[in-house]
Length: 525
Ligand code: G
Ligand code: G
Ligand code: MN
Image (cartoon, rainbow, N blue to C red; front, side, top):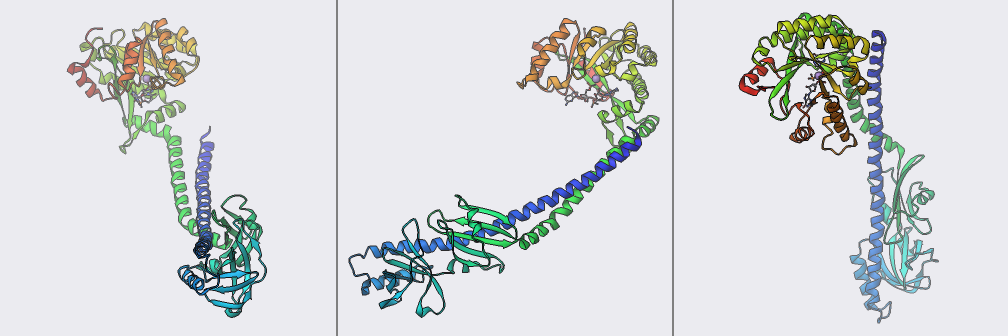
């Protein structure tokens, strides 16, 4: 990809990041607003229903009390007194009375000689309660009542009692209805009967209907239902309130993400130039990670791993800059620097530890460049390395053109260097490479070591790799060993060497020397 198109891509990604987080926050605000208002409208509907259910409870209770006085005349002084008591203790009932025919004969309000006409019954509920939904009582002015009646006993409730209770918001529509018939009993505002159908067999539902956010609920005990509806304008107001809170957060998150993208893109794009400066400023150094004998736990060698500390103090990870250096054609310069640093770091080491080896990673370009041979021969000479003291690590990717790389690997082996195939199992056509090249070590990639003891399907692969390496008479190094269980497993399967945090993290050359001086090294090989 050209630098130009990479820049454009990064910019597009950055803009997308801002757009995506902004849209997401708008979506979130909408959902949160809807959730909030739905909760509110359901709350209103439940309040209304509770009021109706309390009235029904009190009515059932009153009927039971009056049934207990069956022996007395229904409109005797005794019974009317009981009725008075009942209406006094029943907060949601205005009066309790006795009905004969379609007339209220007596009630807690007194006796009516001829009886007061109530009009015909509108509905009989499934529990046998006869309901008159719109009754005018002559002494009560224009006020309308609902009269519930069973076995002659009746309760009188103001028709709008349930919906009068919740009036915190003036623009809320409220209604009560009879679930069986879907009839509205009372309503405030333009409530639609069709809304009841949305309830189906359930006891609660909420939905948006064109202009309103609607909640419909039904009693589990009584033939009572309630509706509450909020104009969508309320919802919009709530959504906007949520947006005020969430959208700025989303935008800021988007900007942070975009800046991160641009930062990394710029870093990647500018990396070749920065790498050259870093080489000039000697910002690279090498760490060494011990490789141990699994039988004795002693150090048999170490892998040289490059480190980059920028002049700003920031450490840059090799997985970031090595691929970039490879892309930019700068990896040979980096390898040359590593060889130079190792020359200095290991001076005198092999004289004291004749069996110790240092591993050096080579990239594809190194393995296709004759100059690498010369550099490594000089390293061997300068460090007085004997055969096997220096090991080059080549990944399968590094051996992409076997003709050229093969010739170089042969020459290096002829000069007494040993060769390890690195990150084994992560590349491709591993088998053909194993046959084509003469390797001394096979390094099993950490990803396979990680599967040991997990029961994952791929955990079998490590066994096959071990068998294959044995058949080819390769020494095996397990990479990334972190637990004793992994080490035990590998040792039992005949793996000789391991590298990993269990034994030691990459360390400075001083620490390596200190460890060797302390007797960590294998003495006889
Ligand atoms: O230790 P660590 O995080 O540094 O290594 C990350 C990756 O960088 C590994 O895959 C390792 O092989 C690679 N790497 C480390 N040092 C070198 C080096 O000197 N040359 C090359 N080509 N790769 C290296
Ligand atoms: O060259 P190679 O790809 O083998 O590089 C080894 C990499 O693995 C380095 O990045 C090194 O720091 C890392 N490494 C070595 N041992 C362990 C380990 O036990 N655990 C983890 N997570 N990483 C390790
Ligand atoms: Mn390696």
